[in-house]
Length: 291
Ligand SMILES: Nc1ncnc2c1ncn2[C@@H]1O[C@H](COP(=O)(O)OP(=O)(O)O)[C@@H](O)[C@H]1O
Ligand SMILES: [Mg+2]
Image (cartoon, rainbow, N blue to C red; front, side):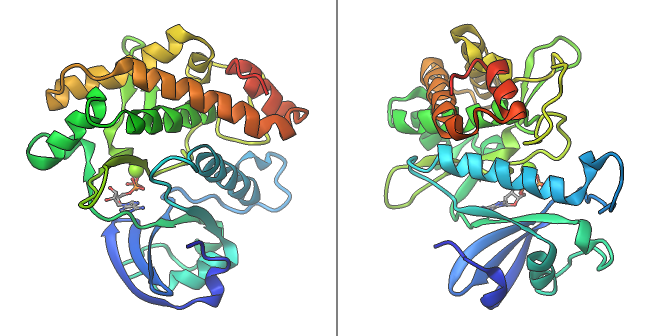
């Protein structure tokens, strides 16, 4: 259930999950609040407002909304919204162990997301029940639907240039896959799914709604979305990584590639309304997506 305004509800309990992530109970519902580690100083009137706080809030909002929009019909849909400024100041006092100084707070960004219980880190799925679940999901034998979810979310990552989940290796140009930012959700009473966290990569040069670079460097992964070969290359990178790490054979590479295609097509539909926005239209062209 989305919170319309976090300032109007009471946070009844909080528990620190990671250095910068908390589980919070707000009006009886469980959420995860994540402070972005990087803070962006608010520089009023600075000639280069690329790093300006307002712009980064716009970018964070855009990225989280794209994920929510594209994944809204998928089985697991952790509702999410950005927090900044006043709203963040409100929750700040409830976060135990928070090491962000009050003076830094106005330049800090955070997200609040549905808390997803019973999740397992991909890199820890190497044995037991979760390995059995993951094996079924990724080979498509148990559940091809989730493979689609995996591909659709990755399409948003590539489009946004998130290098947190995917990046080219500097050594040989192969695709690196970071397994820390998606999880297996082991559902005790129904089908299992895959879900994403970390919708926004603050370090990417390509994640800005209003500033898509004129010269697209080879590090931008979005162009891989434009053809079968590129999509297969991404799907294959995941498959190879999982096969090696978790000893899962016969990953349904084609299923992941189809999810990438379907996610890209949905991005095009959703962004049709923005097709005259110069930076968005250039990004769509770079990704070979027809609005
Ligand atoms: N929505 C969520 N539900 C449950 N746990 C979460 C959620 N979001 C984050 N976490 C927990 O917090 C940890 C760190 O989250 P993450 O967003 O990857 O932070 P960072 O990338 O800054 O380390 C995750 O490994 C996970 O255990
Ligand atoms: Mg992370």
